[in-house]
Length: 201
Image (tube, rainbow, N blue to C red; front, side, top):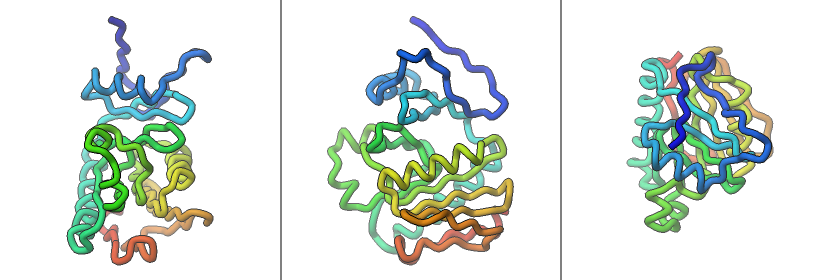
């Protein structure tokens, strides 16, 4: 049995550069993850394996607060399902992506089979949130946000505590960049959803 040992990397997130004729398929990616339960990874549309680092304390604290606010909104509005950063979705373009937080409308979630819900759900979330850590590449995160929109997301937030900015993504529009906003609203796509951000900066 062959193994791959990854000790560290300057950015804590990197792609494995495979030979031209070697690419991971979504099926192979699922098998890899099933045999390596502690592996945190994504798969690009081109079949490149992306190794992710475990979350550090500051990012984990911020992400917990954001996920809690998303869940609280769902409890009030009684629609949809929230997901944390450990969930990977199989996007329509074949990429396997795990946003830091996500939301899927109830009707779309309930249309999936039990096996699809238990595995990597084959859809793009309606709403995605990415939280940049100190070691994340902003350029790569911006590309991920555009990928989510291209695959069906109706709203996306990229929160960058490192630069004190929040990027708001909507289909067909240029990203809106806000400097240290106290709150971010999901209106009109997600009526009533508001993330309180003042303490995250």
